[in-house]
Length: 274
Image (tube, rainbow, N blue to C red; front, side, top):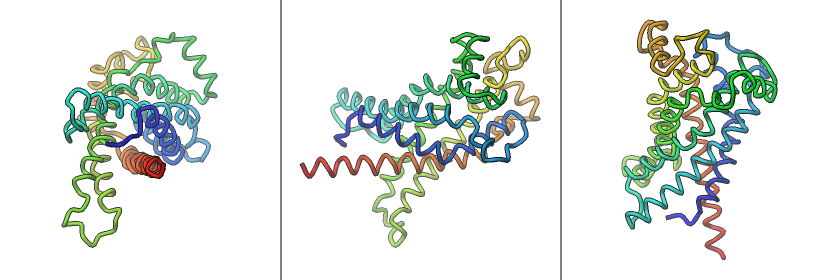
């Protein structure tokens, strides 16, 4: 097992998250617009609106996911006395993702409100808290918790498991060296986006409509789901905006795993020379 500690994995996660959001922010903006039924943004400024809050939130979120994943992994090993099984790796990643929702819920809510109201980040944050209170920052926490657990289970659980299974597989002989990573990344990414999209849609609608008295159809996760299905003409409406999000999640799977693997390998190599 790697010698890189949970604290070191936390730092790696923060850097990887910053890289990922800097590349993929436009897909987040497009996805939110599709889910909310707004016109698609067309200028670079509009596509990167909310970038600062997203970058400032994604870095801590991936930091928590990486760090918690490593912490839970070591905790499980201390209990069982052996390295995690494939099922254990996925379970650990699910738990790490759910933990990160404590940060992602308020950060994404402010980003969505900023996009709707076209305000500066701090102006929006102060306005929202002043009108609704601090606890209202956790509106949509339930679906966010489930989404983050499944998402992290995909990119930190399924992807590494599939990659390990494919390394050295006879069927891939003669293919480029990165083929296993590509297959694993697409597998983990598509699984993550398919399973999490309904929860992301519910979360986005709830966080875009934050006054239950004005929009009672978005009062709870259940009423939001019922309204989305009714309004959209069927269950398929829960997967609205999946195309840009699928591109983003698959891309994020590659970026985050490649960044983590590269930095961990560099750290391990440097320690081996000492």
